[in-house]
Image (cartoon, rainbow over all chains, first blue to last red; front, side, top):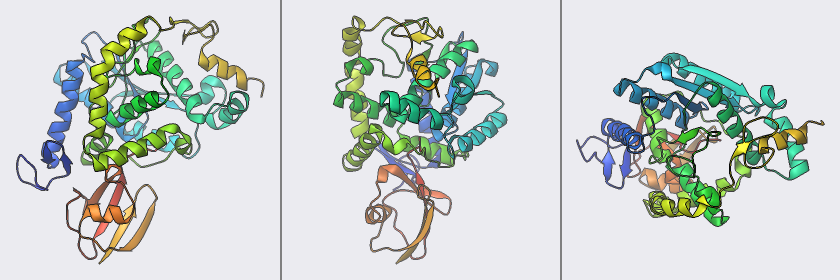
Length: 311
Length: 67
C-alpha cells in the first residue's frame, strides 16, 4: 500500500485510504485536536487532571493534552497526571515505571495513589474476599475503586476536568456490552463527554481519543517511540469485555468500519437516550461515610470496603 | 519460506514455515486477527498487503492493551 498523499510506503490502511508515517501522525493529531475543540473538552479556565496508567492510551492522551495546551497557550502548570496503583502483582508496577519516566521527560507532575494506601488492601488481597461476600468479578471491584479514587484525588487537586485515554474500541465495546445487557441507563452516561446530568460531586470526564481506534493509538505510540511494554492484567480474560472485544475485531477484519459504525449509530441516538434517562437517573448525593459521590446512602466503594474490613 | 516471528503478546520468538505471500496471509496462518496486531520489519510498520521474503524477521506488536 502507498500513502494517498505522497506515495511513500504506508503504515496503515484506513477507510479513506492508506497513510505513510508522517501523514498518519498529522492525521491522528489533527483528529484528536478537532475532537477536543468540537466537544470543548478543555477550556481556558479548566484545571486538568489526566487519568494515566502508563499504557499506550494514557501516554498518548497525556502527550496530546500537553500539545493542545501548548498550541492554545494554556499554561502547562494546569495539567496534572494521576495514576491509580491497584496492587496487581507483576502488572501495574511495570507500567508505572514507564509512566514516571514519561512524566519526568514531559515535565508534567504525577501523583500515584494506591488501593492499599487508601483502602487497606491491594486488589489481589481484596478481590477474593469481596467475591466471597458479593460474587463480584475483579474488574467490577477494580472499576468501582478506580473511579472512586480518580474522582476523589482529581477533586483534591482542584481539577475541573478529568481527561481519560478511552479510545473508539473501548467505547464500542461498552456500547455493545450495554446493549447485550439491556443497560440503557449506563449507555446514557457514555459519549465523548461523560454523564447524563451535571453534578457537583462528579468531575466531568472527557475522552480526546474517542474517534481513534485502538490500532491507531498503538501505531501512534510506536511511531512517537513512547516506551510501552506489553503487560497483561492477570484478570483481563475473566471479563465479559474480552469476549465482546474479540467479536468486534473479528467483524472489523471482515467488514472494515464496523466499530466506527457502532459509534456513529450510538452518537445519533445519544441525545434521545439521555433525554429518556434524565427522569430515571438516581440523584447523586454525598456518601454518608466518605462524603464522595453516591447514588444511594453509602457508595459502592464504601460497601466493598466494609466487606473486607473484618479480615 | 522460513520466517522468524517475535510475538510481543506471547513473549515468544519462533521460526515459521510460511506458505503464503503477504502479511495478511501470515496472520491468517497464525490464526491472529489483523486488527489486534501491528507488524514490524526492520523497525518499520508494514501493512497487510506487504509481501514477505525468505528469512524475514518480524515483530508482532499487540494493539490490545493488557488491562
